[in-house]
Image (cartoon, rainbow, N blue to C red; front, side, top):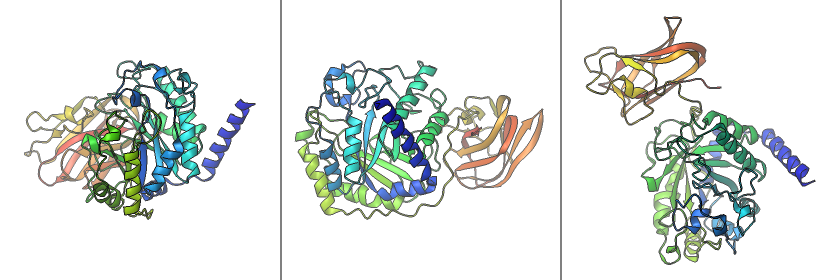
Length: 459
């Protein structure tokens, strides 16, 4: 009977989500209007005094005997927060929900309670939105560079399917450890478009946020619905220039997961948090999420509780951020040009054409200033379907007018010619088949460098 009840609940969640589907632009505006939320890093690292614990740490360690998610929700409300986001699985692979995908979970611990359910129920009961964090990188299950199999991809999909089916409306999934310089798990090994479309098929109103700002330019949405900035990793949003829906995150303590010195070490200064983050972020189209780490008993320490209440006394959430202008929809498909052969007109010193297809936005092909109309070509090895080209300049917005062509049956055909002075130039078009794509720069201001020439076939 329980099986059929779960199936009915899942069906009703799916029907309800589709019945009230919003545009991506509206979802992005709703998200930044939330203004302020609580990140909750609580998982196996809580019991290791390290953010990266032994991936084979015993489930017996996880035993939050006083767990009270209502305390977390009350603390969030006291600060004027509007949502929470819980680490359902971190990089060492321990799942804190009742999953059928692995025994490495809370159900194999002495605790044997579904933490995700208790969190979701508590926050929803207080009128707070529910978001979930999920790590693609999983060192316990060898979901890491060089080990990925199709079974790993299916495990990711099944875990996300559980999280998006069994816990009601999920406003956003925050994904970590994917295509990051330190995880080295690409969007090809774990196919982003496949995962993205799975999430949207279950809950169309669920935003997909990948914490990938360390790699991708700030001027476009590469593989995420919301641009994210982890301040502790040196990622800081430009309050003056940002035009995309964004998220900025920071822990109230010295690190993300609870450490033994947290109860006796002062948390971050409340007034500084308000002045530097909570109050001004909304004017920059940015939502601020403050991490508060529960301790090994499953409770938030008193010094953090007091700081959150003080925030609520000093700052009032008016639930209004700056009005967001529509932006290009996210780039979600694999880059067909990545790692492919490239050629060009005369380059500047060592900055040859290969640097425009190396999947690294810190390098680039730089034209020699003596060339009047420089050109760059990427070879796709075989004829294949394409419907988008994205060109990203490395450091400037120097290229203003240019032409794209594609090659089919050995003949070059026109694709686009016009102006676009922005740093990231996104062009979507009706599908064509091509084995090469060429860009010719017709007008520019001074010299320039192309960080990446991307070619895509979006579904």
